[in-house]
Image (cartoon, rainbow, N blue to C red; front, top):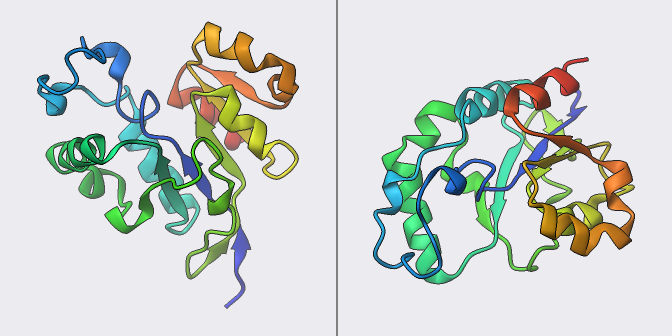
Length: 173
């Protein structure tokens, strides 16, 4: 069997879980019903197609505290993440490198290897992937964070997108 190159690393907060569509704040994080936060519009269908395209070579990588991880895993179960995307929970990983998620670059499945797509909402994260991954998608970025990390030069190397449909259109060109 010949392995093809291709895979994706996808962030969780504001890329899969739509925090901006809820009333979650740092002050109410411990008391809010986290499961009530919706998924980003179109994300599960797009992730399913990406996962199929890359032969199961899609990894969700997020940065969170232990308490947040418990809420995230419950959210994934409540929203039937694996059933709806085909991505098993073994491919959902909490990063140990802070915002540097490049340790996941050499991910592989039985039919695919490597990473060709990264989707995240933080320019700082993207800066670590510049020159290593051909398709970098900065998803609904916060202007303040972009201004803070603009000096990295990463902005010139990313596609700034507002929807999963935009991501798929660019990938499928």
